[in-house]
Length: 203
Image 1 (tube, rainbow, N blue to C red):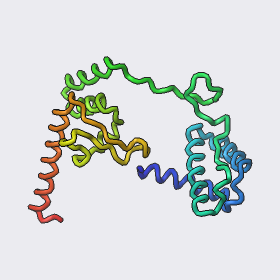
Image 2 (tube, one colour):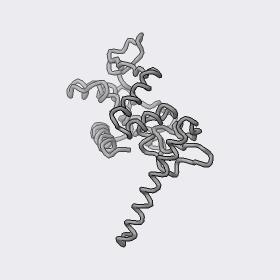
Image 3 (cartoon, rainbow, N blue to C red):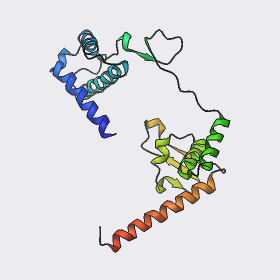
Image 4 (cartoon, helix red, strand yellow):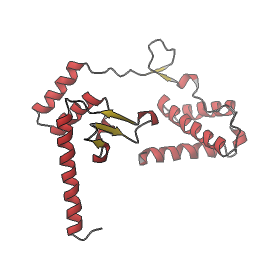
């Protein structure tokens, strides 16, 4: 988790615990009134309200785990209707977001060829791998040599955005040679760094 995210969650929790110093004050009505108050006073966006409520929900789950509140109690941190965000066209939500529109196959191909034309090899490799794995850019950028099994021709995605995102996928024949080349290059870089550290007497 990014340091900025952790700091924001800490700030949200301080906001919550300053208002509700004891667990018995955490009720549906009191939290809804408080959320509406701080949102209007601070002119918070729907996204900020959703984030604060999300931090509150996680905090309440923690309180349930340590038996400070009953596990059967309904989590009282709920986003008020006027601050709900929806990307559904028929939603009555006041805060609508535009759904992501995926690129078409031809658009992705054009992006790949444009990256090649611009001699941006790193971007071209990312696009090529994304095209043939369906992985997020952050998943591709966090791959390590140990995640790639050239014997089994598979790629393991670990520590992803969600537990369901952890997976092992086969390497498509179309990108097999490129993956092998990239893996070998990365291994050579790693070995060079290790050799350099040893030669300099760095543990």
